[in-house]
Image 1 (cartoon, rainbow, N blue to C red):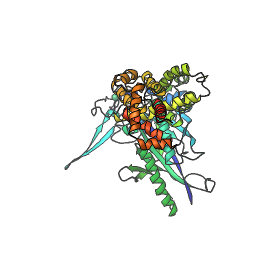
Image 2 (image 1 turned 90 degrees about the vertical axis):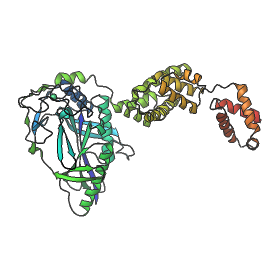
Image 3 (image 1 turned 90 degrees about the horizontal axis):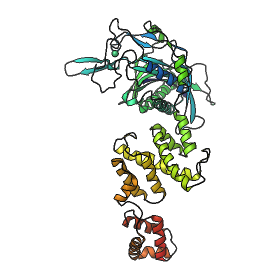
Image 4 (image 1 turned 135 degrees about the vertical axis):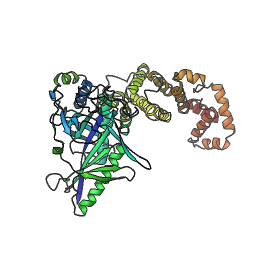
Length: 511
Ligand SMILES: [Zn+2]
């Protein structure tokens, strides 16, 4: 029996607005004192009327356009009725009949996947706006149990993005979410941090039996299991992997799993049944009478010409225009370092053009020289600088190094004026002080600018103390020259230029 997973994702994203969806309370994060950002509207007092936040509408349209969706001319809100203590009105204002965006798609790479699933397009069914619920806190001590409700989150704007069930593995699900996060961040629609609950995911999964050509053996899908409230990429990947294994065992023992809602237990690393599946009819949706339909036409036509460059296009441009490798381009976009990196490359380009005529002719073909510089820049950004910033718990925005100074450091390396070990030391100082690299290099004597007479003297001493190595070089073992260079670099604390040192070593040994 060959089974393949059919996965669809529902993603809830908190929109980054100053105020809530239907009132003027601040849209605060979890750090705010409980119930410090509430009013009669978001606590559902009788007679309080909602007023729509136009910024939330604008962000919703932006997200829809970025997901290649069609945006209707009118936006209409509906009431979704259910009872729960975190929903003071007894209903949630959402969009059921006329979502703000429909029929879109995103395209992205799936790391380590085999063709043709290494680059896939997943269709988006719809995206709709709604208000978030409050937050319940269950607090128990030795003699009492109590549930407290914090209404700060009640009424904060959400967009729910629903994919078609076209995802085929936990790895694809993770890549989909990562691309979604990159898009949302690029749009400045949300910080989309899953750990902070700014992006939450429900995953639907069923299995289907296929033949040897991966074609379904029957029409239609099996009942789906919905895994609720996954709050990290890791949780999504693990919960889906667990469900695939669990459902496979069911099918193999002749049972078809029934549709249900399940939770994810991070500690036990398994899903658990919460309740049998509800249907949409349970919610008795009807149009929200307190909000008039919103005209989206003007907003859509305005925004459609003002969309920022999206992550997929940005990665391609970083590779084609600047010569960055694919992994470096992915890192730079993923971590929002792309702007900084382009600034660095722009500065480097200025120096480069002065020394290399083959470079930057129109930008369609990247010269070898440019690629080499992009490789140098990519390595120093994504591994060296990223490492230092992680260690110091800093973001690129908090980093004191001007792009111009970072480019200058790369230029010093490229010209051989500093060795890579000392450049690393220099970079740490730059992060700490924000000073420019040439001054720091001079002040701390880190450059490879050693006086030839002094260098020759050090080399003669090393040669005198290493008769074995000298005789090996004389026997033709030229690899030993590198050992001498290493010894010189050590003796000079990286201040010798290795190329010049090697020439002097050869001359002194007589090779
Ligand atoms: Zn309020």
